[in-house]
Image (spheres, one colour):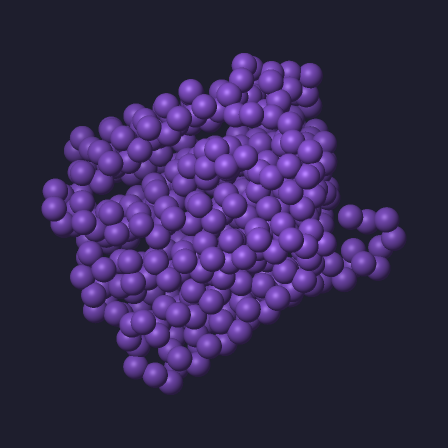
Length: 415
């Protein structure tokens, strides 16, 4: 069941399919971050022109969002363990709507950066609390299936967001993008308020005690395998922020397309996530014990896609659709491997669902922040450099994951 009073837990046996309504709500919560990041990307050149700001300063409107989103992810899980999942989600969605409305009236670029930082604070809750709710309600292969379904639906947002943003900017100007985000945040608040009950039983609420919270974080940080698993996932995911942070120069300068043509980058890249997540969900439903093989073949596809991307950008004239097909293959493999990798990492801390989701989300988004704010500007003048960057993240992430698992296999009784 979805609707209920505080303290009511959504219960499902391992044999019960994931409720469609719950998965859609969780996907909507996770969409907030990508919508906030991707919808306004086509307007970046216009922002620089209107505010007479250098491109590096305008880029900080993206970095500020991603940084505060990453930072607050570290705390939302713990807050949801203490205050309840539903309350945290409602607060974050209200803040998202209000801060986007404030951005519409920003008088200068620095005020806009502050508004974007507040939007990032709000966006940090969705992915963390959604993972915690999945852990509240499901176990084992069912949890991986639920996460794959959420990723599949969530993938729609970054695919359509820059397209919507491009058309809104073209038709009505950049202010209309933030009006759109304001309305979207308000709509998600209404859905969460009326349709989502509390999934964490009151008996499992944790005391909001600073000493206890710090002790829990220290316990998580002492689990080196958990931390390294999260770093590995973030590195593997690094291709996405690399191309998100490079979207404007990649589309408008390298591919020589217009501000309304961002779909040429985002649709193939996100289609890979959607199709890969759907394939993982279906295979896990039919064969619950296939998780290890899904991870293996997903990671193999990431390496193959990286190699194809390097070869193409080194030897051929950069053109569509060939320039983006390796990205689709990469994100397909990533989406197949990701549910099993994430759930394995989170299960290292089985008694702290919210905190483990916070830590994993924080580490992933900090890597996202570094890649978009520091790595992408160094590489986005060349398709070949971007291909090398994507391959570097994949190789580092997969090598780290392999080393962790090799050590785990050699250690009796380890998870």
